Length: 475
Figure 1 (spheres, rainbow, N blue to C red):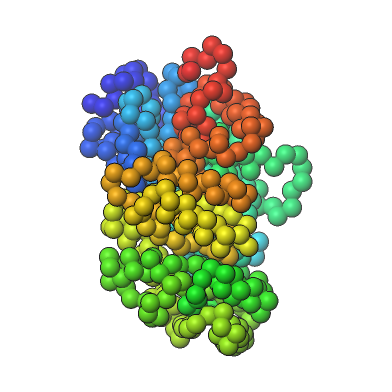
Figure 2: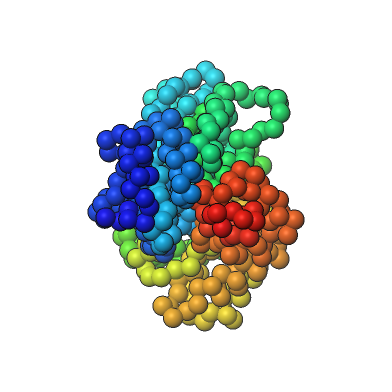
């Protein structure tokens, strides 16, 4: 029994609170919850709790608080920063929210949807589509990622350019605090200026301040028309010129503007068997626009013709059907999987000011060539919102921490962020202090101390120690 590190009395109380199937303790049951998606952070949960309601979450949190046992919230377990994995001590309990998967309400006129934290993101998208509405958060793991994790990490994805991050799409939250108190803020209001907007504290906090159990999410009208284009460009500077042209000609119909390196497409061809419709392009752009008004395709064709005529793009394809558009998107969506099959990689989920992207890429390549010979940069990402995935495929003996420092030093010089959408988790926790001002770190510690004085909510994530009160039993 893996649960020997916590008391049998606590386990019995948790079983009483959560009912049949609510507490898992066998090795086989614990194993799926013990390792992160990238297999970088193996943990050892003392037990896994599977509440089916907010009331049960609150009861479990209160019992663990009284016993001084740490809780690690876990959704779809698809994060890339190790933020939902327990440590190896065998003393932490995983709180898995997958049984809380109800979509409670949809309002197609008010453009809102209320869902529990365990809802799969793709199921929320489908529910919105059934009501002829759009839930615009979209990313590679949406088929298994859950709403609670999406909120806890402030997920981004391909549509941030038009609709914003998750933070921009949350109207209300229901949260369980560190002492088991339930705070119900499930208001479907676009305008609410009554006091502090406390929900923002929990969005992106990675379960370190409280546990999201339900949310009211913003929907959008579903575009009746979409147009998807794939362009070859010589370099990121040319890609910026195409972005400017798209902004000028297509305005806010642009939903996605993705930059893809030739290295990425070669990996996808090698490991996924998918070939680009444009051969041997050093860089490509994937653009998608959407509108409920007719004339979108004509506008996109006009924009493409202009950038090709000026020489900003060297070649291009405009999808003739949804099926063809899907094939173009598959080139982008299979990059991460293909990179994993290539070998060990060091991932950098960074953002810089959009005009600085070419400068960043040039400086990062130069730093990599000087500091990690033989390493290969696999570059792709959401150029339209400044988020670049500068991943580095390395040899087994190469120092990942040193490569992180090389890349992140360039990001810092350009006023960027070391985490654009994946979060800090365990993966970047030691680097956060070096890339945030001391006053910001001090403020974060004050917030953490106020919200979780015993240090029992997802310890070791986002902030690494040094903030607990003197004499705290959990220190």
